[in-house]
Image 1 (cartoon, protein in one colour):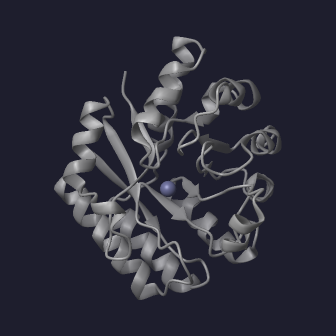
Image 2 (cartoon, rainbow, N blue to C red):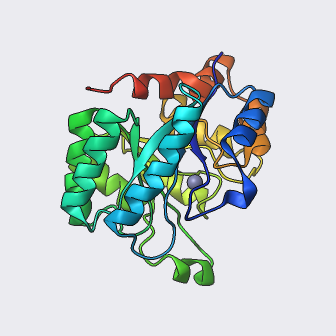
Length: 257
Ligand SMILES: [Zn+2]
């Protein structure tokens, strides 16, 4: 049974990840039976320029080259720079072998500025990993005024039914029950299980609401919790395998070129 962490990170010049190195990440993954790490290097504050997001992706590419086949990459862009973002995605996916696109909180994903990025993802056959949350703490929410929530993602998904969109961190985006309810009918949206939250019954409920075929194992660097919550969930072994790797394998297999 393979384990593909669909939501991980490596450090970059913009974020030191608490001293994380590709080597320490891979060592931890090996101990936890994680075979593949799909990583990104988003810039999480402000409005990154094309030079900045290209540099951040460059740091990820180095980690990918250090651990080929073990560390895979999502290309991070700021959709506000449309021409540069599309060129960056083309270059990183088609030439450098990145496997998806990472969007953070610079724009809500329902904002039309994001649509050309989604069209590009469809053309290339790669998923979009969308940072998301339904933040109930006003202080936290004030820090991320443009964070996308499940309703924004469901809206985007309905506009682009051919896109594969992954809502980030079931266990790291505030009210996860609200998110599950809003994603129920968004058939082309997957949810990753990552984040530090390990509420009892969370994975089971996600399976009930979305179906195991729409859930993807991820850690967002909460690695022990990430593996533990899927291992511990009261679900069938078949469902566990779908979540741990089979679903993501299928998504990665859609790649057009
Ligand atoms: Zn993350």
